[in-house]
Amino acid sequence: MAIKIKDIRSQIIHYESIDSTNLEAHRYLEKNSVSNPTWLIAEQQTSGRGRMGSSWVSTKGNLFATLIYPIVWDLKILPMLSCLVALAIHETISFYINSTNKIKIKWPNDILVNNAKISGVLIENVLSGKKKYSIIGIGINVVSSPQLAGYETSYINQYLNDKTNVSKVFLNLKNNLEDKLNNYSEVNIDEIRLEMLSKSWKFNEKIEFISNSLSGSGIFEGISDNYEILIRTDTDQIKLNSGELKLIRK
Ligand code: BTN
Image 1 (cartoon, rainbow, N blue to C red):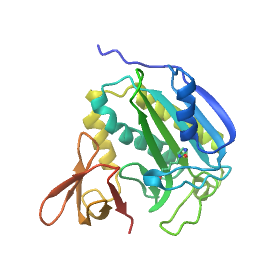
Image 2: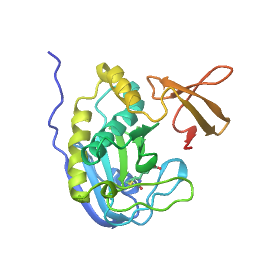
Image 3: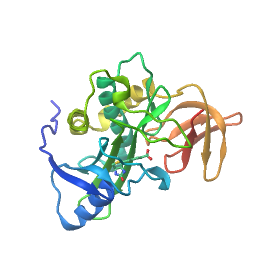
Image 4: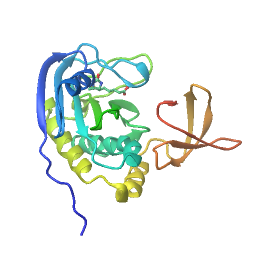
């Protein structure tokens, strides 16, 4: 029988206000030896960070959390962690928002509700020291969402008569994510990928993309073991990782 690493106790550190829980996670790791998963949560961030150098508007009432997770698995499955995190957030959002709404994972790990972004993830791995960590930063819009020029946004309470709050959403997310992380292993990779594709925005459809070297369009055909996106263009299949590519929301 496979032994599961279950029920590893996590701790939570709370901040009223901080520049960024991800930045704080890096500072925290410089000063502390972390052996159990450690959540840093802030009521607000003054300098919230997003993927690819963007910022994350971080006003009170929404969720800003970073999980420092000591890496206990083979590094070759590290890229799929991004997928696992997206699934955990999808589960949390689906707990609150009725499935008559379209709740989708936009690769690599944005969550969209009816095409409007409700959640984003910034994962930064610390692999240089003796102990290796994943810094998993998660933002979920709970009570409000910013008006942005680039894309539409949404928030959980927009869909609820009986409103929820950030503490409840955090506990729900914490349970979902820890559960998935404690059972994460090489043997689940195919299952995780299939689940992601079943919930994915535009899977098997035409997407438009921009990357450092390319821009174009093609059919989103799948994801690789390294969580790269596979796109079929007119001429061939391309494979790009999340640091290289942005999907255009249309
Ligand atoms: C994105 O979609 O661009 C990623 C957004 C990630 C935001 C979260 S909020 C908590 C954590 N701290 C940060 O500064 N960023 C992440």
